[in-house]
View (cartoon, rainbow, N blue to C red):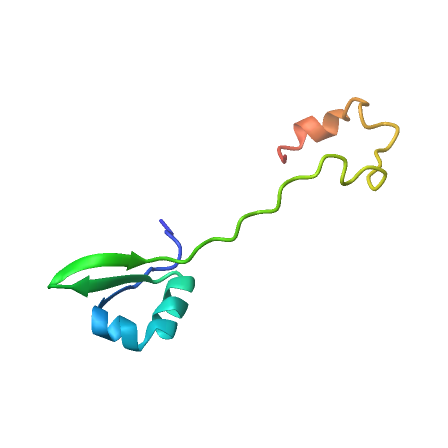
Length: 85
């Protein structure tokens, strides 16, 4: 089964993260897991923030879409018997 791209995990010390924060941020934005360790334990997981989707606007497509007059007409028998959706 294909599970998508593999996510790599990076464990860095606090000093390494502090010295190369831009690179660690870029890795997190690309989907890598970045763990920052202090006192020999993992303290923080650096993750990218997903941007919020803009709210939907009621009526935004009013007047821009049209339907054919036969939109509610029955479909032909060969459509149902073709075996394809």
